[in-house]
Length: 435
Ligand code: GDP
Ligand code: MG
Image (tube, rainbow, N blue to C red; front, side, top):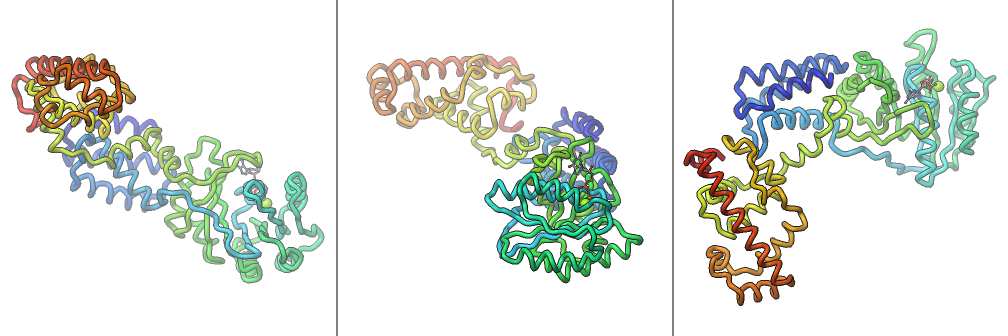
């Protein structure tokens, strides 16, 4: 997946305008990518319709390339489905009863061990009840897991009545703060398994039913989730086996199908291979892109387009004052390093003045403080800043005279460089029009 989508995005990289045909192509590529990643077809169609509509109708914010804009839309639509923040497991009742559900082999028992460790780290000491009467040695597997962590366990390998085991476990642990119920994932018939879950649920009355889904199963996840959700009110989903190459796209179908949030993921067989689900990371992984966070942050920042245009104009015409430089620094904050800004200007080909590319954040901050001690008159007419004004500005901003002089030197060099670029690169064109 990562590869084809990355190629798609590369296709878009150089474009400053995206037409309808291109957007449709991109959306097709995204569809293909998501389907390859095991996301359910109707969900893909649904998502891609929204993405296409938005990409066609929304104008990219300033400073955001069309390519970045499309990625942002894809991301936002995924977030609509998954949420943007991790979902907490809220322990708000006593005893707080967690019932696990899921097919055999999905990772329920392993995940219970992981969840116990997770809760222990938070200061809880959960108790576990085994009701899986189908898997040979199911009790033994739990016994080993819980013994290591010194977790109380109730089970009886000779009792083949799951509901009875649940009742007895409830009674035994009624004073515990958290009780976790392991269940079977197999029966003679699927219907029998679902019946058993329904009965268990009505006896246990879980505060949280956790559905465990194997991250490698793909499309079937939606159907599975639907079946289990018919037996009890599923409160959260755990996706396991995300340590391999699986991207867990199938889990999206489960979420879309039953509307329960994903709260945890399993990333290995060991008890510590367990993480709180982070939608952002999951989506980055699904899309095969690592830089979504920085991209989203960039998109969220609205650049003041008038100031930008004005400053660019001033910079390139040579009428560049310290006031403009101050604006420039503001823009740098919003849009990233000068280099990036220059790269966005058509015709410049990324020719960044040496002075500008040497600026560090510390220096920018210091310069900002110095400039804030200058009067508007001084900023608009930097030539008037002679020794006595330098001394006053230095005193006002708490820096050495030399540092004010350094800023003035930087200003003069930048002005010169800008003028040079303006003549060479722009052919007298208006920046206002291009921004
Ligand atoms: P259950 O039948 O649902 O209780 O599933 P188990 O907990 O017994 O797990 C089935 C198999 O999946 C075991 O071999 C586990 O070690 C393995 N497993 C569970 N979770 C993960 C995971 O996150 N990553 C990997 N690689 N294996 C897992
Ligand atoms: Mg099990």
